[in-house]
Image (spheres, rainbow, N blue to C red):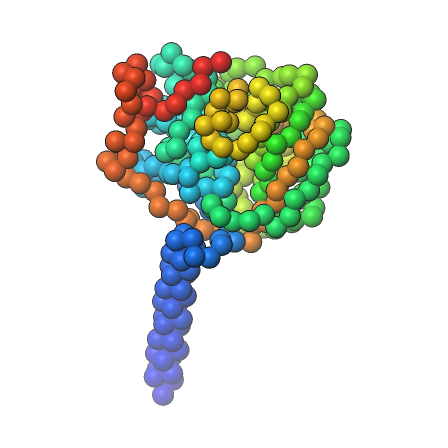
Length: 313
């Protein structure tokens, strides 16, 4: 009798798990189709792989589509993993600090719709922010993230155009792909000086959380190498105050991508907030063979970079 009951219980548990998986798959499909507004956060890869300098085999030949994202941040490569660098997604494009030393455009800004990544966090397209906040003048970046982490202990992604005075960032200058952990080889990956400006506008994408349980370990850099203790903040520096978030217009106005330092000072701006309620490996990565037509460009001098749009500054 006990054996029969145990088998029935096991069967019911299997049915419950299978039903949950089916419902999740159906809900993701409906959300991605645009019939329902999404409420989740997406993660491709893992920040632990990023900072352990690993490219998981299952991601080696796949591309992500920036047009499926409202905003995002992490690492991106255009035209090969040798250029993997700090990146953020806005306006249907990804903006990358290119790290391929063999390229004549080394350490310049690159942008494209499709890209590769071993760690990219993003808000899916069509998701509406939960609220918008206007920032006070003289707000340090670390104070801003501390405040957001306190208000959203489960984690929050925030994005918006901010004016800084001063503006301070640093960016990785070598691709972390050969298995040498960034925390142990920081001098190898950060070889270029900080970017400092007395004043500058920038589009910012940040994550803040008090993640004592480790639930968000895949979304943020290890604590020992964060430029901001309560999370991470990436900035797309702009030449002038932004008029639009349209990708091509941003590309014309963009200067560089980097990780904001904790003592950069916000003078004005507004942030849209997206609380992190759940994290899913969503999206539909494209195989390299399916994306090659998109990556081929007419400029033969850019073939080493997979026809990415390069912005020379």
